[in-house]
Image 1: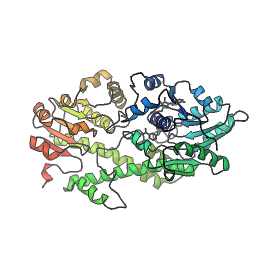
Image 2: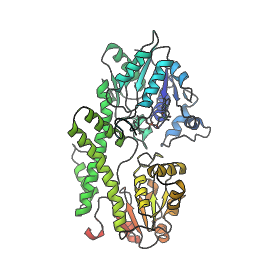
Image 3: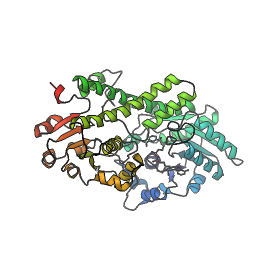
Image 4: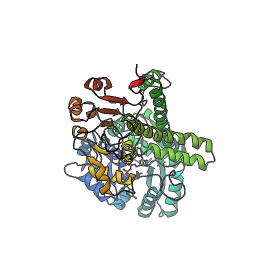
Amino acid sequence: PVHVKKICCIGAGYVGGPTCAVIALKCPHIQVTIVDLNQARVDAWNSKDFALPIYEPGLEEVVRQARGRNLFFSTDVDKGIEEADLIFVSVNTPTKKSGVGAGFAADLNYVELATRRIATVATSSKIVVEKSTVPCRTAESMRTILEANSKPNCRFDILSNPEFLAEGTAIADLFSPDRVLIGSLQSQEGLNACASLKEVYANWVPNERILTVGLWSSELSKLAANAMLAQRISSINALSAICEATGANIDEVAHAIGYDTRIGPKFLKASVGFGGSCFQKDILNLVYLSESLHLPEVAAYWRQVVEMNEHQKKRFSKRVVDTLFNTITGKRIAVLGFAFKADTGDTRESAAITLIKDFQSEKAFVNVYDPQVPHEQIWADLLEASPHLSIESIKKQVNISPSALEACKNAEAVVIATEWKEFKEIDWEAVYAGMNKPAFVFDGRLLIDAEKLRKIGFTVTTIGRPSATLQS
Ligand code: NAI
């Protein structure tokens, strides 16, 4: 096997950036260059004051240690490709917006463009690693493209090495992954390439956590893992609806079922719905795959996980309206949190976007506050969610507040949309004093101590718990 000395990563996003920064940190003998076409993003990675383009706890520390030593960020994609002996393809694979499979299939255009660039530029052999989440058998298309365009004496080996990090805990996940998965062809060349990549991870990941499998199993495992994770959320959310209607408490139910070692306690938190760039996209991808394979029942099964998630968001907005005496027209609602989960600035598919859109269409006023999401991002997301509206008309209804306390001023209701720790620690007495009465709190994340807030005077509504009238 080749001993890897230079790595190039194409795509300096949420996955490529943290993943390869950690490789550089843990492998000082390997030069790692992360390339991207997006100049602003690369500039931010290179910024003197470490104003990095993404927020992840611990990331800045890693970049501070490795940048300039053996970690580089650049827009010179060709040079990065040319120099490397191993190339990660870590570009975005969003859901297709038009054409065949629109709304379900993954848009593989970015993967294909990056692959073609590798074939055009490379003058020596490379190991090409699929890091992006892709449909099963994409590696085969990549190999065909590479082989059809390669120069003499250039060979390409393709590996699949999906990323399992979770945003918000990316650095901890990368330092100590549950497992690293590497898929390869089972030919001698394929196994050699696999050994080369395994050697990189072995610098800090224990051997028994590096799993090596066939290419297609590896590709499908990523889609399967996300589908199973999202399915758990939709299952607990479906149960939360039953709790609200019966008087059961979803926290108690989750606790009780989590004691079963076959189920386990993790990832059983009911919420206003999952978000993020991956779960929905990857399930829809699996749905599309199932349909293309003439397995309509399998497709319908997985599709229901996404439909339950949509239902959960709608159910929550409806509960807000119902509780506020069936109308929120002209009322001010504070939405705390805009990121799709805590400890990230990422807003892709965030439940907050849907909630605010619902409140807008009920003609409410919204104050939104998030500790990490840049204002431009909030405006861009709200505009994308309501393309028929102008930014001016959105700004008439929505206002971005500088703090949680400020957001709650003169509001009728507070909606917790993201589980930021700081929302737990707000001075709720002060919030109460500044609000119109009766003052309502809707906890979409099972974050706050409802009893404590009730003592202050709030009317509290919690996901997975019945409204006051059913409580005993
Ligand atoms: P991202 O959108 O943050 O980053 C992708 C980057 O690739 C962008 O900066 C874009 O400019 C760049 N790019 C696209 N085409 C390029 C080209 N031809 N040459 C150079 N740069 C190019 O996306 P993110 O979130 O990092 O996701 C990347 C992949 O990883 C996706 O397939 C995603 O499904 C997968 N993934 C994402 C996870 C997450 O938590 N965000 C977790 C695990 C996998």
